Length: 210
Image (cartoon, rainbow, N blue to C red; front, side, top):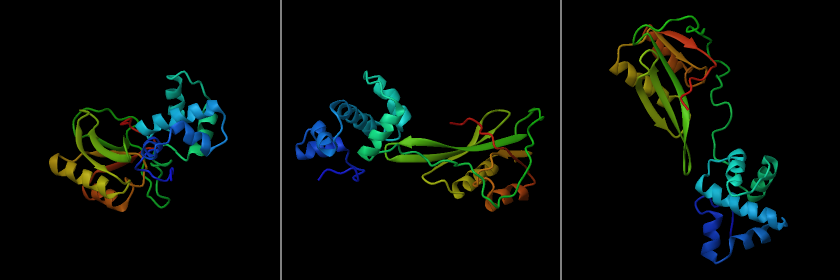
């Protein structure tokens, strides 16, 4: 009756609905010793409040309750409980294998005016049920945010829309710099810059928007 597959109702709430003590559930669900049952109960409490926490953050939170546990143990118990932090997958800025290559143009440049260089990056924002992705375009000289947009997927479209909005509102930059993520090296994104006569600069470095 109680299942970890239900993503809308936490184990705590499921136990409440069927009138079962949560610690009794964990005791019956596994052969873990009493200390691990206490840890599992606290993990579930932390996870309910912060479903985007992985084992590393949960280890930190457990210490606040006087539970000193290493990450390997927490990971094992989380796996046993069927839970994991809701987070974007790795390599979200990896370029597409067929993406075109452009040089990094900002190494020796001196910023002297607005619209000389624009940069863009994507970061993610944790929510109760997952993540939203935020793309923003900034003017490197003034550090002003020129355009931004949220999306629930890491697609190209919301990056293209953000670029178009910035170009409609402001005078085009001389150089546009991004990382080599597939969103920024897509044909749709690159063609807008090329058609506007904007120099393209790519780097593998992130610009610290997180």
